[in-house]
Length: 342
Ligand code: ZN
Image 1 (spheres, protein in one colour):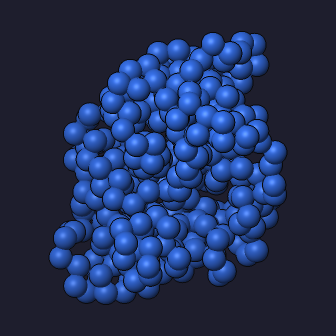
Image 2 (cartoon, rainbow, N blue to C red):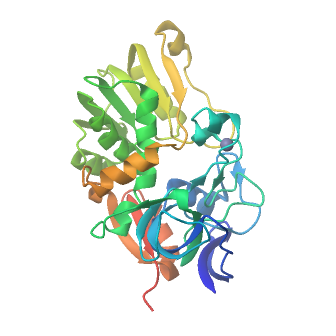
Image 3 (cartoon, protein in one colour):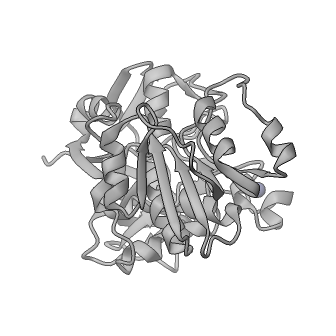
């Protein structure tokens, strides 16, 4: 049997004993090394849904994971048992118009770990053991901690957002929201050659982490204003109407807004008139495609240091404590889950 962290309803998280999933040709079975708790896992746990996706049946959470190959299916030729990998949680169909035009992140039939976008839901990877297609697995060096390797997923989200922003070499950039995604945006925006990076939030603790990661200026907008700021690009990673309004106001004429924070369900009110008079480009950013391989490589080569984000590690059987800590922005950024030591 396989113990898997299953959400039954709001705040009802159980370590259920589930049968092992069958191993199809081209697939591998993985043993969990570490998994990061994401904002969307927290939304499912606290509200029973994320955006427009509602929990309708018990679902194993988790999609930011790294681990070890334990078994390989027929026809697997790129991986061997014992290999350490970080795992892309997305399995696009490779057949729809979006996949065929190189936008697998917009796949119309994607299967994504721990997501209620489809019914039956796609089960997640916070489990002692889970299955992936070999193409989802990216080998990592022996010395790379699993918790760091699991950060490839959120890092890929921010690399994609930077791509959506267009060239940032020598540009001034505002990042709204200093949660794990906003903080990782600091690294990705720096990598793209930005001149000056400002990041804002309503809490000090995440801003201190963003400063450690290289932000030039941190602004707590609960105390200070962004009035004097004018930037070429803004990355909105808070998913709030107030955050989006701040981002739009800070953009110079001809600037670009990238929206990657997930809004709460339903309509929101924003001052979009600014987009007309300043001829702003407003563009969405959803997950990632080929950026996952780049993220895995940057972490494997030690090119980016994500360790300031890693707050704490809990065994799966203490997941309730892990989720409670992860939900407290004053105390935690990224909380990782690891299998129980028996
Ligand atoms: Zn597709």
